[in-house]
Length: 629
Ligand code: ADP
Image 1 (tube, protein in one colour):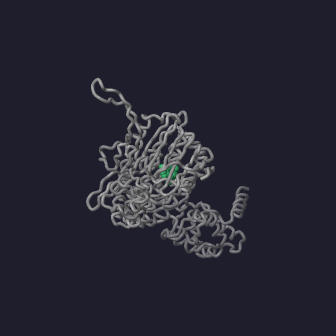
Image 2: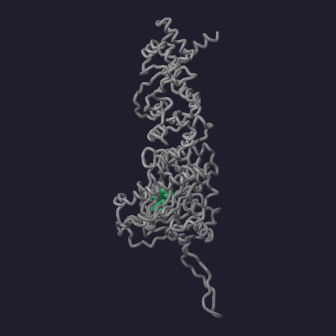
């Protein structure tokens, strides 16, 4: 194979630059990342070989080996894992699989990230972290039945591909260490880092170690140098150990190993299920969204690693956790599942369903405890993952109520930005109140000034504010909560009001006229919900709020045109004035304009656009001119 040079995708070049410059003080993590990759590669071939032993080429003595060349100043991490062929090398190490990388980079630059591992850590830098310690990296790799290939790069703009030298399956990553990173040539440093980051890795991480030993007895004794291969990690799977023996630091390191996160986890769930099904689970609740979730992307599936009696099976069994808990990371090790079957058959196994149910209730219980006992921590969790958790209302009927217990909202009784649980809203409610009233709004400011809340405010009723676009879709699925139904403040009938009886008669003809005059309005009626504003537009009980409609249109989604009801406030002087104008002269040229203006005011007050902004502005200007003269 002739040697060729290829360019990195632009984003990757930028990212490499950022990694090498912004994560410098955390550069030692390169070893964890490379050992993790080697470990994954071994797990992959081991799993594939369960159904096809030929793939092993007789080599299943799993090992990750570190070797140092002091002369050449290189550190090599070798594994006998699955290896890569030319195509997968280019794909894996020449591009970034994540979508949304560009916008992520823009954000990093915007926030002036210098040494901010939190942000870039969410990205999962993986292999590229090698360039923090090396000015050149060589990857020599071979797959079963393929030629060896060599990838080499200085981590600037390009990489080369050429013939490899590996004779057996697996990958060797050689780091040509920078002068200031020469500590990674020392046995002591490597030993310490393996212990710190990778102690629990199931496969041995080994290194040749030279010791002086005494040989012979008495006068014949002499010191000789002996070089032996030594295993640096204890290889004890952390989830199999007793909880009491594991330190918080060990949990954190394991979490970082599986998640590529930089931060410690916000919560750890470690338990053993016994009885009808036996399994051990070690799960983590992250503190922050990982990169793909932050960009709203990702595959929307939960990735819990499934082991069967310590043998890694897969990290993408979809039915091990429902998507609404996809932020949870971790490992499940099952005792009773059959080892030697295909993924597809395993996927159908009813045991997995039982495991999932058990995991879900544990996670919900842990979150409920966190909410009760560690309020601040829970708030952080909720602001990161609340929107994902809410999806559960739509799909997990059985746990609906438990999920609802975990939800927090702003309400008309909270300060802006502060949240309150639905249960608190219900507790604070007058017993006779049968409904939880909510208003979906684009932001708090609009909600606070919404005409729809005037009546509720006057009655001293708390209104829950749905400020997250998903709320309006998922919350009604809940149907009721603690026996109270949900009712939108801006939809449906607000109930009859006896006091409007006289007005109704008086306004009857006028209301008919307004209806005729305005298109896109399906009914015009007097309002019982308005106290201060002249007009508002009300949708059907199950219609979308106007800002959600607008949002969907912007996103190119088809949204059916829905006519709404125009409600007028008969106590408002503007409404009274237009009505008087109608009574005086139905043909007055200004009457039609004034009716349109009332409708426009309803749009403006709810935060929507008026149909014809130019005409609207001209009318207001004319009114000002008249009024201010
Ligand atoms: P990640 O491990 O998060 O996917 P990396 O950038 O570390 O990201 O690695 C990219 C990909 O390169 C891996 O997903 C894997 O497919 C491949 N890879 C990296 N190291 C090895 C290795 N030692 N053996 C086989 N494949 C590897």
